[in-house]
Length: 249
Ligand SMILES: [Zn+2]
Image (tube, rainbow, N blue to C red; front, side, top):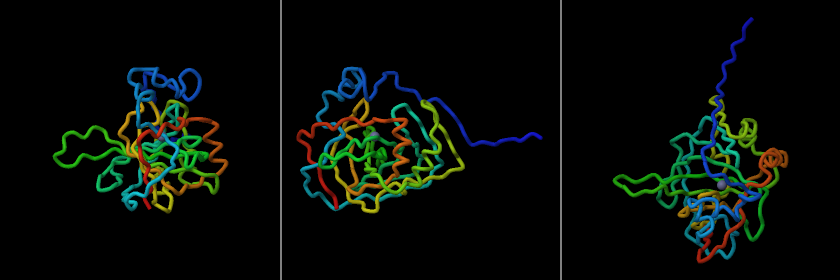
């Protein structure tokens, strides 16, 4: 008897960077700015991320509206982290500006610190601003929502992602598994905000950071699954310089 196995699994290479960088050795974060002219901001930028969150001022009331939809699971093991790509159509509105959710990914330990305290992991939800009607100059403005992941109860969505981690350099699509990133947000929607950068090369600035004050929990086993693959994929905290961090309650 012949059994035909219909699988919804697709494997494709994801290596695209031509310039290699890393978290340790000669290509570690201290040297990112020297690896390429395109990475200069990593060394010379004045509004870099992540930061130690402290010396807060109270900002306007928390104002993020979520319109996240379910998406077929697509997990990328990109050699620096585990990333989940998001289908078009999920948005957030932050202070009246609309952003599309592109992907989320993980760091261990956390990149941001709150009063000099890191968490075991951090989740980043990456969004790109949707241009308004008639707007022409809308160069790739990003907003990243950060969620600190503390040790505790396991997270079911992260369990589903971890079950489907492909080999390094590949992508796995599981069209039978629908996930919704709304399940990766803490109950309290209070957050810290500041203007920063990408935390990986090319360290582009002009990124609107919103880091939730309340962490989400992830089990010790779930942390171990990730750190076995990526024991350290966190850029060290950067100088705050003239920037303000605001707390939005
Ligand atoms: Zn990140």
